[in-house]
Image 1 (cartoon, rainbow, N blue to C red):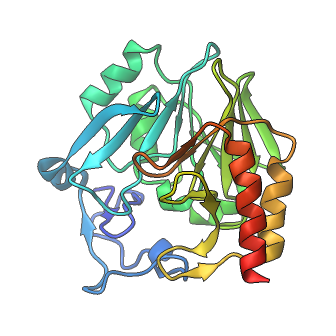
Image 2: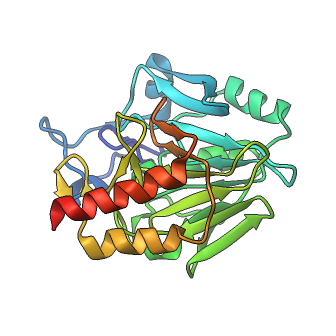
Length: 265
């Protein structure tokens, strides 16, 4: 029995003897099936040709896979006095990554923006004794490896600890969420691509589907703005290496919302 990984999106499936017939996440209109057709990789095969990169990204410990695998996102460690939380996830766990997190106080929980980044979330949880994984209930249909560690929370906000609060923004997916982080030196939001940091690193944007270039409608963008309106933040950490807005991020967000709405009007 093997927990196969989709080669295109990197999401891990429940254990089976043979690879699944299809990946519902890739067949959804927000993603796509490889031009060569659906394909799978085992965790052992992935580890044989890749490694987990551990390094600082704008002051936050981050984890990514090299060479780039699947969608190519990186995970972030939100370190707080009340426990550390891994934000978003990647498709590999390494002894080095686990040791580095344990050196910094261990892991209390995992939270993931949306299903494209579910990846090997169960293996990450189990590597730290089965810590809870916070996913919004509106996206429960996309959980392809069910597990008792998964917490399907409902509503608009969920405090993980006094420093970290999940905010359901919707938009990209119904349950797309961001993580607000109260911290010394300036609050931050960790957004995945619910709020996409642009190459300028002074603006953000929004899409229903990034690879298929389907924009998000005005009502959905306004809803994201309302969801974040009462939260102060200085920095935005996006989904990929170095794609962050550092300093004056709330103003950059507000400007970007107005610019986006004007562009699609």
